[in-house]
Length: 97
Image 1 (cartoon, rainbow, N blue to C red):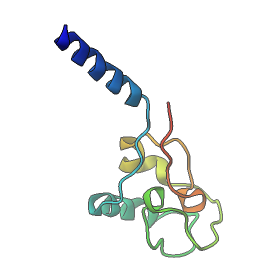
Image 2: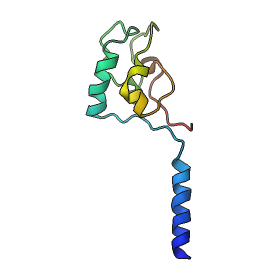
Image 3: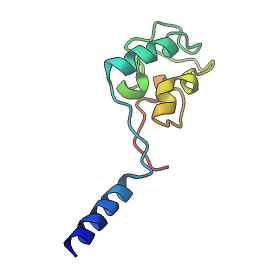
């Protein structure tokens, strides 16, 4: 009986996290990936520093929406992000699918 209770508890714990979109971690690996996409973004009339807006937050500079490279970024796909223009809107938020 004890084993079944542990398995049930594990299943409940797992179920509680299924469906959550992951928040993007601010790692050197993600930063290197990001530089390939944010650096060529048509909406940023400036060098995108600090980059990795989906993990670090929005830009302090004004963003003119002329297209968004986020959907082509491997980070966007890996963490199943759903919005665009993180340079304007800020960090990707954890949310249910």
